[in-house]
Image (cartoon, rainbow, N blue to C red):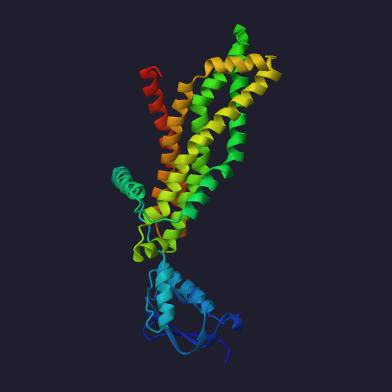
Length: 373
């Protein structure tokens, strides 16, 4: 039987019935539909469907029915879907358009205050999460130093290698370019006063006190902090963290402590590497662009950079390493159960780490200047 649709109008002329017969599928296209718009006149108030003789249907039939019902709805005609198959009725409910009411000025104002409230609550929630996680980390390190923490030593060795030697190439490249740029910009200004030699002081002090630890921390935030968040977030999605808890293993001891300890230990070494490579970058500009002799540049750097400058950088690097590992592990452990949550956790870990690094560095700089260090 070929697919066919027959239209019937009742005796009163106020109801239209469409009777479908045969298979209404994509493979039986085209369909023989009557001129439905001409049938939906002003006298028609109701539209009915009869599918008693309908053999098969698929999405092609749904498209036709959906178009007819939308046309009738626009004309204010009541559509009665009782005669359609159950599947079609359910799909029609999903495809019906919802009326969108334009927001008024009052709703815009309430929306603004509502958004401010949501952001405030989110900030409070995140602050509570950070404080709670800080306490959990403190207790985990107590178990670590008392020998009660359960973790794999090979994992700790792997993380040491991953955030140490594996990170050296990118740290070396960026630090060299930073020192190179600092010397070049400083030379442009110092040449005006005939003080080219003080480029060595500028690069040495800036790299050891500020740029060395900060650049190493920012690079590690984008490299290792994001990796920690993605790894732990994926474990949350795969329910591996729940599996560890079921087996009686504390996830903080097993997953967080090795990562955090490895990064805290490696950050001072990376900062020292960053200091040295940055000074070498300034050395190239001083020797090849300003015609400063290598011996004179070396002696000037030694005079300018003292042990306390290195210690300031080391203190900063340890704190920065903690912040990067803390943010990465925090966002990963509090990640949701979807792929989208993993992406958001990774992004949030990097952004939060960099913001905290800059704020902490500013605080350290002010504090050490007040102490005269």
